[in-house]
Image (cartoon, rainbow, N blue to C red; front, side, top):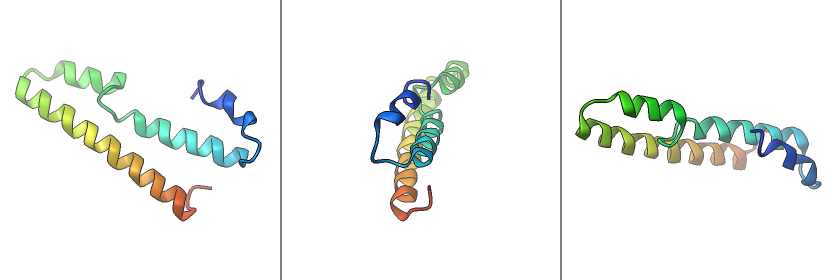
Length: 80
């Protein structure tokens, strides 16, 4: 969020409230990815290598599903 919030004033054609909402929603979705700190701790704690690999793939799929869901919400106009 600290990276994207300063960019919002430069987007003159966009509603500021919508821009901040979209950033907040998608940054939250990215927190569920396999590359986030929280999930890295979960993966590090998993002892079984096969389970760790399966969990990594599930978390990546979850990230893509959440981002697709967020984009659908944007296109339908639910996120305003």
